[in-house]
Length: 264
Image 1 (cartoon, rainbow, N blue to C red):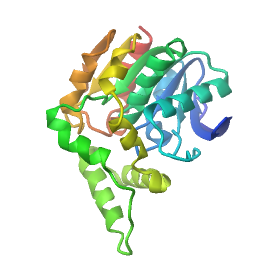
Image 2 (cartoon, rainbow, N blue to C red):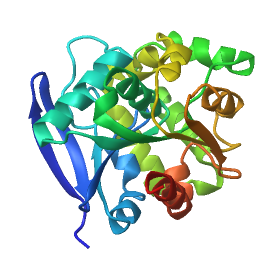
Image 3 (cartoon, helix red, strand yellow):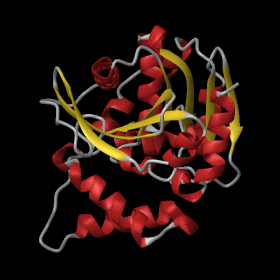
Image 4 (cartoon, rainbow, N blue to C red):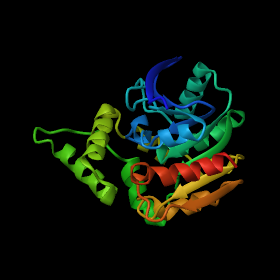
């Protein structure tokens, strides 16, 4: 099987960087924030072996894609993904999203229904009472400020190690740090977009078959099943003890569940 190939695609607003592996049915992989398409590397070979053309893009302001002139909305991110599909000549695709990417996938399905076949979404949550503090923190997250001692970098590193738990490795920590640094001052933009939209309203407009996945170690776990219940044609699947870095922790199990749903 051919290895992951990286390239850039021209869109009206700028170049979008992507990773691609496999051939067959297109599935677009949308990452969390402040991550990039690199988070999907452990999963892509499994999707490719299952007969999918796996395309993991860097959303604008993330990874190696262009940076918008101002903080995007969730709808703006959706527009950029459609522009990528147009540039690649993809009329319809499955969508696989994680956290911010899952919300963007739902927006695409709600706004551009004919361009989507099915959705598989990890960690899409409603911000229920138990998540109110988290919601306020992300809604008001300031741009990063780096002092000479690198305190902000140390704090980020320690936070990712805590979130990864037993799945932590230096390779994962370095990748997460690099991805975060690539966003520069735009680091909170994805979180701002996610907190300043009507999540329930977006979900309610999605008519497509949707698989919502979650795990008890995901920081948004308290609100994931609540979000799943709002999809008109949705189902909820738990990966026992799955965490934020589920694509690193359990790539084979994750891909198996996604493939089973997309092939149904």
